[in-house]
Length: 75
Image 1 (spheres, helix red, strand yellow):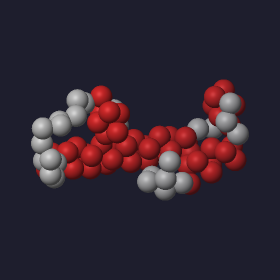
Image 2 (spheres, helix red, strand yellow):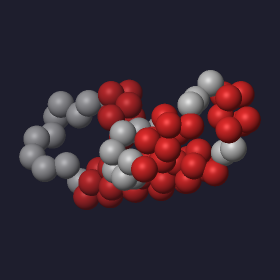
Image 3 (cartoon, one colour):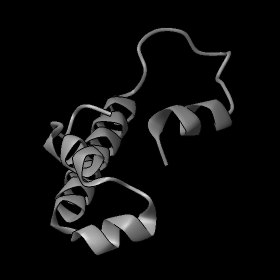
Image 4 (spheres, one colour):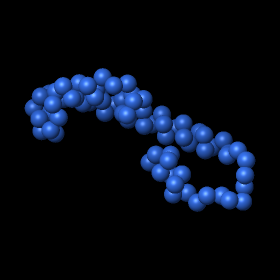
C-alpha cells in the first residue's frame, strides 16, 4: 500500500509537534523503492508479450512498447 494512503488512514498525532520520527522517512523510501521495482518488473513483462497476448488484454503493440520504454520512476 502506498505511503500516502497509509498516512491518511493513520490517526494524526495532535499532541506532538516538530519533526517526525526517522521511521516515517524510511517507510516512505521503502514504499517508493518497492513501487519502482514493481513498475520496472511489470514493464519488462509487458515488453515480452507477443501480439496475440497483447490483443487479449486490449493493448496495441505500439502502446505496449511506449509503456515499456518509460523509466521506472515515471508513472
